[in-house]
Length: 51
Image 1: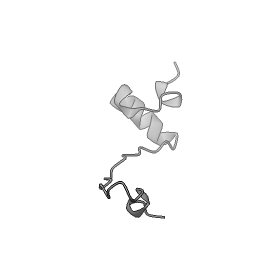
Image 2 (image 1 turned 180 degrees about the vertical axis):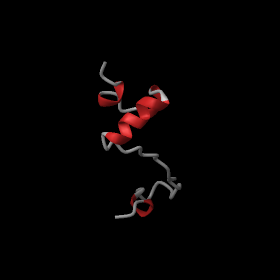
Image 3 (image 1 turned 135 degrees about the vertical axis):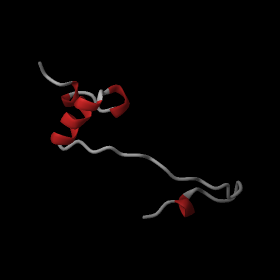
């Protein structure tokens, strides 16, 4: 039986043994975080991005 870790990309849909399989496959868990401040209608959101 093939683990769903090979095809599923959302860790919350996997069991902990399948997450172990995903780690063995080299899959990485990304946790997005950050904030965007209001700068008013005269400015874009570029100042909040780190380039």
